[in-house]
Length: 314
Image (tube, rainbow, N blue to C red; front, side, top):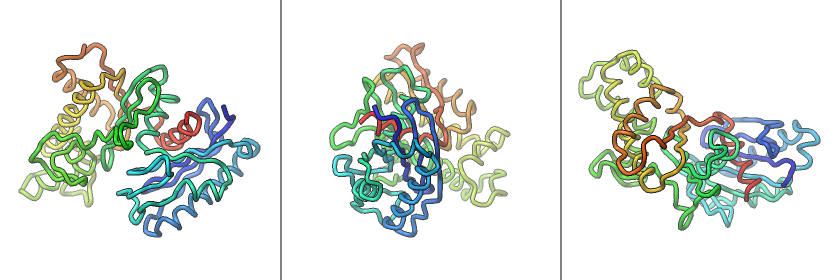
């Protein structure tokens, strides 16, 4: 196994890179804005510039990297190293990410869906250490997922596994970005939480949210905790739908644990306590005492460590 690798996380808001050792130690890291408006070529130039800076910061450890792991939102073609059409990266259509970065840095690279990479990172370095199977959910702007079975990422046919945000829960529910309606993402993501609150306000609902310009899901969660009735209604509905999605995942896969990361998970016990109760209320065919639903542990480094885990493990 290589002594060190370079993990690169390409996100719609930020780019991050880090030199990582086999134990998951980050020897050097850097982070810059993505600036998606500049287009894929310029963003990739910025990725390479960031990577070079981080390799210099790592000193001798940066000179010995044997592989680069790249985490990026999909859909993508892992084998060809292409990002097909990432919703949070406007203008990215069949972008040869691996070829570009390999040529620029002269080191072999491997590409993985960001949610899959995060799942592998939590499995290897985070709260999933010691498990054989887990499902990782990132609940943020959207809802993504990664599945680890037998210690490996489960990709499914055409790498389509893990799209848990598009489990249909309410067939005639709100429209989802995927083109369907009533998906988990359209009901429980941070975007959905804020959208639902705005809908209720437009109907004449009373809430302190009216005093917050451009409020988001974190504002809804905070006011719900403080007793705001409308915010509480929105939050409770989102938690219930998230629980139903998790129930479906547990019933089908029976993983050892569910790990939840992303911005919405920052609500802490205000999310996890009712979520666990709701999941256990609906589970009928899996022993409830074996269910573990845990917050992610890698926080802001999940992209870097997930990408590094892919580089070490591929």
